[in-house]
Length: 398
Image (cartoon, rainbow, N blue to C red):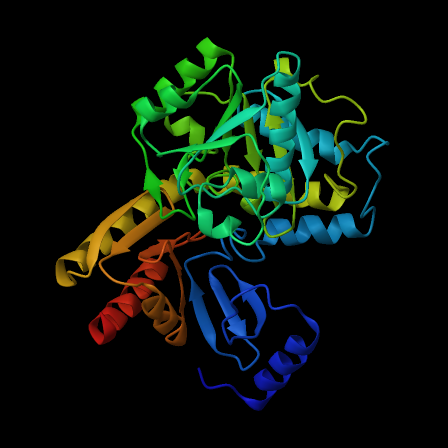
């Protein structure tokens, strides 16, 4: 992409002092609102990936902005050895919209996964069980526990030896899971829909069989809902699609409306497994983060956004299916709610890059899957515009 002098100067200064741990697009973002972002030169982009799913409500939603503005003048941080009213209210809201459990608050999805793994290991320690089974093509985070749980070798390369005690089985293959569970297994961890792995959906029966197996063997069932949670699927939480309840659930991304917050949610019977001294997070569940997250729930309820996620997700899949008819490069369209993937017969990176040049933000994952995670407030005209840009790009280079 051709850059102005201003953008070039910002990028050059940035690269002098910031580590290159991301593959960055040559765009300098200055502001965002709704499903639109603008760069420093004033160019407008339509974001159908919602900041990697973090701005799942939308960018700078008025309720979130007002909640943060109001709270920042009162109290930003409070150590967790004191009580925090907003943290209690947020835990109650999560309990009421999920399975009535208890929460531990942190700052990110990886931290939430680390907490889940520690709880599972502690739970199994009295009987000598430590093994955690996860799925091939899964993604659970970049910290050592979460990385060890991630079922993609490419993320672990160069960081070996990873933590021991993890097994990987094919996603959706209950027979393989059943065979893998042993006397040492303390937990099974799964994404309700695989995100980074390529938007893979398993049948309802798979999750029901998984739940029955875990219950029968006293193995904890962990649902990693960092990407599926807080309305993305058209339900508050992805597990609700399948008629099962996990023992443990991890949340982050959309929970704070753009503000960093993560949560570990556990069934009541497990709430005493971790005791004072076992686990902590200095910044977890700050008043500011909890105020933002409570505003997210308010917006979802008051604006009926779960229904919008279902309707707009179906509309997006319908429009992608129409593109599939016109462009044989699209092999399959799949997903649930506003978590949608279009698998291609070729590398999708050049397509995503060209879309960016034309003002559309989407993502390519797993090499050949175009991933869409629009905001819950997305409108038909936004989707129409995104499909129009993608159509033009496929005409050019696919």
